[in-house]
Image 1 (cartoon, rainbow, N blue to C red):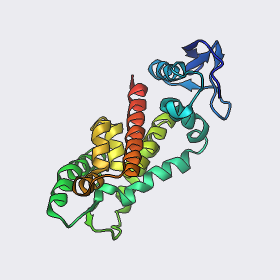
Image 2 (cartoon, helix red, strand yellow):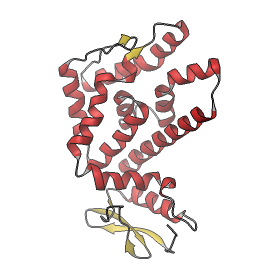
Image 3 (cartoon, rainbow, N blue to C red):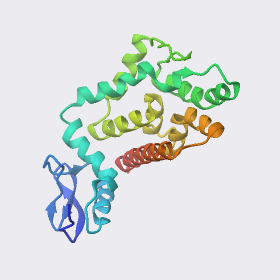
Amino acid sequence: MKRVYTEVTAAPAERGWGVRLDGRALRTPARTEVVLPTEALANAVAGEWDAQQHEVRPATMPLFRLAATAIDRTGWQREQVAKEVADYAGTDLVCYRADQPPALVVRQEAVWQPLLDWAAGRYDAALAVTTGIVPQPQSAAALRVFAAAVAAQDDFRLTALHALTTACGSLVIALAVLEGRIADDEAFAASQLDETFQIEAWGEDAEAMRRRAALAADIKAAARFLELLAA
């Protein structure tokens, strides 16, 4: 759509902070007023809208899209969203290791095992590791603990956690970002470890490059969203 507004501002709103376009409240695609938990996030979303030129392009506003998702979807479908996220603990990327070649085995151990050890200590629940692609059942107790950790997040953090988990293919990596254990670039590197190893050996085609760039952008946006929620 065309940009028809001139001034974009962040302003106090009931229960938080809103964004105004020429004094009118910014709304989500579902026409709900955007009310954000922190002034920092409101300012960042306002900045995205102010940066639009002649055309308003939602794809260039990742923070607004996450906020709108939290308001339009997560707030109304919390149980479904939380389950989608928590289910990743049952088949988490970092639990499935290669048995060959040795260089990949060593790299997975060096990058993924510290994250698993951190999660086990942080949540007092350990996930089992296996090799190959045969599913490794996780203990019901551990799955309950991780599900509770997911369900404890508010709508905005749960939305960011969902974005991180699906982009990384790992709840453990996503939780590490949420808790400040790793940064977005480390999360991308950990989640793309196997792909990066193959690229080093065989090269990367244009389609894979675009896909990886999109995943990196999604991870970066979700991590920034979490930072702004804590500001």
